[in-house]
Image (cartoon, rainbow, N blue to C red; front, top):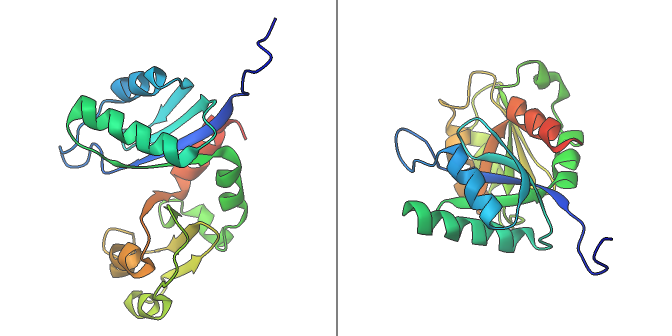
Length: 186
């Protein structure tokens, strides 16, 4: 018989910035899975080595869980990454609101920047000046959409976006976003 006051499990997505990049901030996915399970998460699934995790949790506060996870990684590995935890519905809304559906055919040219907070003083005019011909961006609800047909690595717009938005964000390409959606079962 189920416990009457037990909370339902919710599907969450953790986006961890800056791990396993260029030999720095090493965090094996098996260890990350163990850390999440120690925090009460279940059905943990990781995608590639760059900090993409889908899991089930009863935690009602994604921001608090993100901080708890960052602290646990710090205690275990000696560095504290920036972590953003989303619910599955937020991911689904971000996908549905994509203003560049024609860019989906080249999934590495389309990026979604998931924002920690709503930017209050974003300098969109300066961002427009930074963009190369063909680059496009759109600031949505909690998401910064970026289309860089020539690649994100050489884009001055991509490099300066977070600072000009004035809000922490982590970018994921369209392929990764859709894989996370599939792992979340939405």
